[in-house]
Length: 447
Image (cartoon, rainbow, N blue to C red; front, side):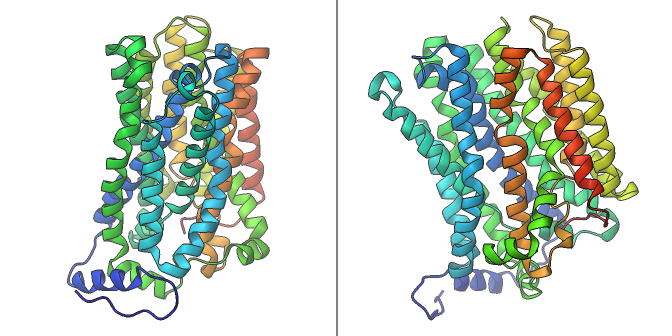
């Protein structure tokens, strides 16, 4: 098929996207098809995310930081983990410019190949024993690459899904993209658990840990084709024409809507803080301060992730009945209660396996209810032309403020002052969320 000539000095994917739409003009894409594409894409992103997160605890301290004692090595590992959250807003700015110049196809292809390459390349990294401190520099560089790519992976499909859903079921469809988090965690945790439980420590640290990173490239290629197929649909084109999903410049967005961006980043703070306090942090505590096998504990967390997936879908049903803002307020209150319980009687103590399981399952249930409706919380207040990029940047800031440094801060404080610090950190997030909701009294809905 011939590609139309495009004026200007830059190559563009827009003619290809137009040809793809012409080939699909007789096909009406249903919300269910969009939902499948969204889930596949988000699961791939979170798979990459959790593979690095789990390795930050069970691999990197021993392979890249063997010259430090275990706690300090894990803290440095969490500092590298946080680099992606710092790079993510920059990635949004860079890839928004690519989107505006070259089209969404080029943007998504570049971002997802960068994400897959950055993750896969880690599987080939030599350790500190082979190349010394350069192994740390390379690891940090690839982590920054992941963050830049995640900033560019925003495709607007979650917004497309919500806008194509029946009005009375917007909350349910808005929750569907959030299933990527528990599904991505389950896949990553099962891989690492299997390897930890079936290989010797030497085999695992030599080559076993590399396998999940190597798989990431194939996972991202599948996600890329799933998403590009939907980007080329008539529905997506129509929304672009209506200026609902058009990338906008970053500077005017910040200049006109800085308050909305800040509130949007603070509203999901409780949920995003809880996110890492039931996934990444417990693994580090188990690995450092108990005799329990991290591989065994990962399977306990998988059961909690299944609970989380059910709670995500329940959040959609509840939001359709009582409204998203009310649900977010209720879940923030429940997270505050959960935090107070963690302060008064910390459950992750020594070899208390029952307490650890209760903490994980209860935390995952609350995470599903709150995280299911946390995205795009105040983007409806943005001018229409800013909503697409505003939703991406708000998400970046929320992750940076709420989750990026959570494992590092909480592990440092807990190791020094006790596990009650977990509850204090979580309580501060819940209070911030309630204050942000109080300052945003208009109805909160999906973009």
